[in-house]
Image (cartoon, rainbow, N blue to C red):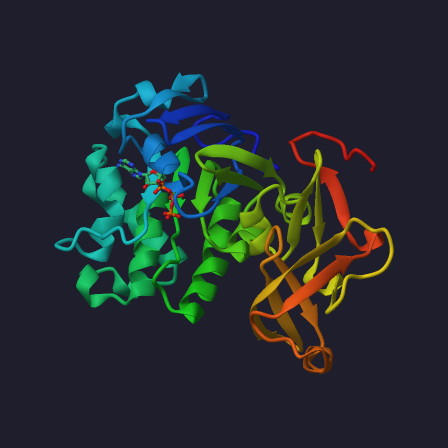
Length: 338
Ligand SMILES: Nc1ncnc2c1ncn2[C@@H]1O[C@H](COP(=O)(O)OP(=O)(O)OP(=O)(O)O)[C@@H](O)[C@H]1O
């Protein structure tokens, strides 16, 4: 959902079709005001996608923003804000000068650039740290400065690559809420690479799922979470995902019945395999079973004890047809109804 039809520099929709060597070929669009979470397993090409837009790697294709191809625009002139994993602030500059840097580099006068920078530090609640050098900041403070530095340039596109990685969990939580507020007010397009289902579900308007360099799925977070098309996303949201002809079927681990013998009946929703892991999961015991594919099953501690479930033991798993969600395996495909 685009919250702003027009941003500070006019309506700028992004229409991208990017090819990075032979490892990424991804086409997608984004509306002004939209936050697009980019998720996928390690090596799927998430960082490569962002690096391509930032001009940090060789890329073919196009990324048309408001009628102008960013890829044909000199990197210095692209209105792109970057917050990358472990990206360091300029160590010799104060927090204020770091945040003012982009505007100064664009030729803006010191006073005007510093006024904007001060305003951003205030919005992040760190105005009193303006004079500190990066080495005098905590990880969370430095990351706030890094995000403020990116936003202070009024970018058309904000690229965030795992902005919470390496921070304490409590700092991550606080920063996630703060970033969420700033992203809601941000009139440009934000691409947020994350490994975290919470980020994707709470901070984004749409989720773009990358798998092996290709776009596997794009949609609102609730839709992607309810009907994942990749095993990676299914795992992120805690669902089992099994291909069945042209369909996928998804079901929760607590919809799985575990037994030591082949279940009776004609249901095809049954799998066999050895238990890989047994671990507590909330009030339940969660099994990971090396069936084809790997499946999760939750059961009560009493049931787990009664069945004597330990790693290596062969079990049968089954799911009731009424407890699974069935949908087409390809984008736009309707379930076959089998
Ligand atoms: N400069 C490079 N030259 C060649 N191959 C690269 C380069 N950078 C990344 N790769 C490879 O391209 C693929 C995509 O990498 P990329 O870092 O974009 O994935 P990612 O989804 O961001 O992964 P992660 O979640 O681990 O950060 C990987 O197989 C990686 O090894």
